[in-house]
Structure formats: structure tokens, C-alpha cells
Length: 379
Image (cartoon, rainbow, N blue to C red):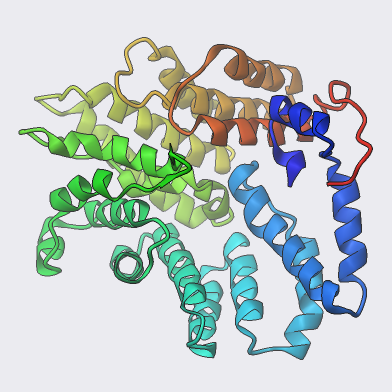
């Protein structure tokens, strides 16, 4: 876990006696998982969480699915109806792009037990995203609504997500559901939590995006559900399904056209254009249209002096452009872009999340190998 920390924090942790030796930590867990004792299942569950959640959300979006499947396989045979086994089976399927199979497993997980409602909430969250990836907004709304009603983990994020999904639906359908999107967005800021006096970054981001609905002339967010999909590294997942990626690209191109033809652009107009260009670039990169993707990313970066509200856009776009150069084989340019972000961009939304992603990406390019001091004590 510590190996995922950015270098400055990692050096501090090593000074305190901890280490970030990822391979040593993983080897110890693998040895524990290979045994036949109480620690075997604990080691297996820890490895599954690491491969299927931690590295996906805080890394480049790619988990070790091959190892996750091999770890889970013996437990599927022994506990085919176990809630955790069904849940992780669904998670692996989701990350592989098998959304229908994942939905079946999550529903089976919900039906497997009624005592631990928190597992139901985890399944609701996963089902919401599975349907979002497919742009089945009515089904995605259903699970976002259930989270708002039942789960207390992050009401601000759930409410924003619910409103964002409704924003992607036709207005008459939203009215038929008895929902008011503007009211939902206005609730977000008041639902935020604080831990040890600190705001949760994702909640802070959602509240900032919802601010435009507090004015006397509310300005609609352009593609909020797709923007939140990016926050959770969802474009890497949906990229496993080219036909769905193309469908999302079509939505973004339509939004791009509407913004271009808007006769009365708002104060958020340029920011909205840059959001669309960032997401469009992600789709094009997943479809291996690298030249067009680079044009989209460069459009955002060239607008850095005029972006007024979404201060996360330029550093995150530079990171994505870095990954594009890595994909092209130009590792030096990729590293330079990411080092530029670390040196020259501060105090933007979700800064810590981006630093985690940068750290993971640089590790895959070997740029930290010579910089980090040798580790002695396993984390």
C-alpha cells in the first residue's frame, strides 16, 4: 500500500521506519495466500482489494486481473454462493468489460445474504457504474437512488452522481421520475463530510461542480456523469469495449457541437468545452486514434490561461497526454510531462489523486528506480 504513495510522502514514511517495497509486500501476501490457514483468506482478500480497487482507482486504471482470477478460483469452487466471492467475481468481470455478467454476479451477491447491508451498498455502487458504462441511464439512476436512500458513506457523492445521471436523460423522463436535477445539485455542498477537519477530495470536487446551480441563472453541467466516470478511472474500463467507447464518443461529439453553436455562451463555456475535449481525447486514445486524441489534449492545455473554474483540467490533461506519449513509445516526453505537473501545478481539485496516478505511471516507466533509497523493513 505504501508503495503507491508519492515519493515525498514515501520518503517521510521511510524516515519513520516504514517502507514502500511493493514486491516484498506482495510476495509476503502471496505466500500467506498459498497456505491453508486463517491468514490464507485474509491474504487473498487483501491481494484482491489491492489488484481490483486500490491500483485501479489510485493507479493508471489497470489491475492485475490474471492474478486476481487465480487467487479467487479455489474459493469459487469451495464457496460458489459466498457473498464476497460473488462480489469479487463481478468486479473482475466488470474490469474485463463483461458488464452483463458482472451485473448478474452483483445481483446474486445481493441475494446471497441480508445481514450485511454494506455489501449491498457496494453492489449498488458497482451496478450503477456497470449501467453507466453502457449508458443505460434509467438503470444507473435506480442504483444511485438506492445509495442515496440507504447508504451513509458519502451522501454528497451519491447525490451528485444521481443528479449527474439524471442530467444525461431526457427532461420528460426526469420529470416522470419526480426528480428535480437542480435541487439535487444544490444539496451536494450541505451533505459533505469532514474527517479530522479535512474535506474528502471527491466530495469537494462534486460540490465545486455543483456550485453553478446556486446562481439565479443556473448553468447546466455539460456531461457530468461522464466526467465523474473519469474521476473514478472508468474510461480505462469502458475502453475494453470499443463499441461502447464509440457510443460515448458520439455523445461527446454532440455536446461539442452544442457548445460550439451556443448563441449565448455562459461564464463556464470554455471550461465545459475543455471537459468535453479531455473526455473526447480519452475515447480517441482508447480507440488508438492517437493523433486526434493528442489534438484534443493540446486544446485543453493551450487554454490553461482562460480556464476559470475547473482548475483540475490542465494538470490531469497533461497526465493523460503523458500516457499517450508512453503508448507511442516516447517515454522521455511522458516522464517530462508528469514531472512538469509535479513541479509547476499546485492547489487544484483532486491533486492528491493525480499525484498517486503520476507515481504509478512513473513507476511503470522505471523513472523512480534510481531515485528512491533502498527499503529495509517490509510494509
